[in-house]
Image (cartoon, rainbow, N blue to C red; front, side, top):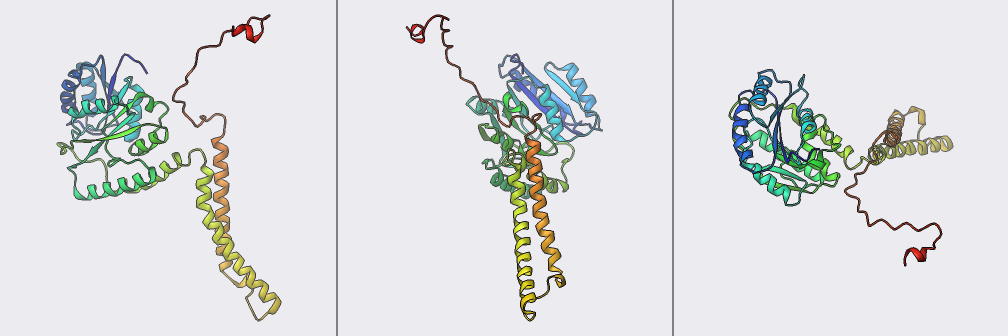
Length: 337
């Protein structure tokens, strides 16, 4: 990333024609008052159908430091954020929502916290102006993710975040994984902090998230577990899932086999194996467990394909002074003299 831009603001938007211009008008004075050498505002239209793209285009042509990225189709917030990150050149990148519920006056607080030594600073909507059902669902979601990811954040859903530029290198967000970005970056070694932010009431439009978001969250959470805790050892995950099936199938099969042996020996004890429908259950459970194990083995093979990444990130390489070359006809003691 270029060092000439110190700050990038990425604003993904979907059908926010009524609010995007007001947000930019509110944001620019804040950015101009920071006294930083250079900054940029990157507006990303996620395939809107209400004229948001046209307004972004006009703002980019009329306002200094504003750039518009227009997606051909509606791809979701994660894709829109990735498109913005691709264009961002700042040493610090801040994301915020386009619905005017995030206050641009909070930007200096994010920058101050990042510059105090953190890699990711996440906002915490301590007092939310949302319906009760959304607030309760959000609390449950945040509690579950906090326990699974091990990152003590109150609000994983908050789109108001600040990143150091290295956090975005090689980052891939798909589906609704933008909600788990803190957990993903924590696994990559990022130092994370959280600050309370003001959450304003929505002035225009309606929320883009419906009831289906809660079902999507469960699948995204499963993906998070695979991408973080088991990213380097997927066999552990599939083995952990398949082991209970295998053990249960083996126990039922053992019980049936013992009774069949007793029936063959004594005829008055036990029962004949082929007359028990439970045999089908035992075979099914056992094969299910073996299948999960084999899928884990296949995942391990795919992970170790040379075309994939190494699986680790180097923070820094500290090199000492180069050792002086030893002349061809001299001994090591001569070089150290």
